Length: 87
Ligand SMILES: [Zn+2]
Image (cartoon, rainbow, N blue to C red; front, side, top):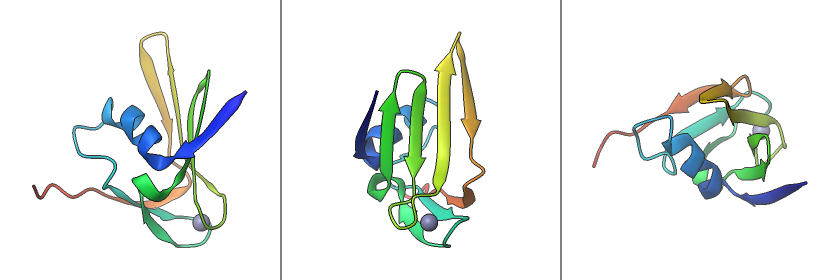
């Protein structure tokens, strides 16, 4: 059972890991080369964790699993993660 949401939902999870404003972080997809802000991606939330997919080609960009007090982050679908630290 999973729920498709927009990337802002996944940003909430990523916010627990990264000390940056993650809705505005940009990811470049390894599948198609498109760059999107995380808030504009597609997020699938389910019991085991969160999956962020490219809105253009559906490549899995990021998988986050949170269990037993740890996070596992699989970012093989991200060619570049760009984080703005400007206020
Ligand atoms: Zn893509």
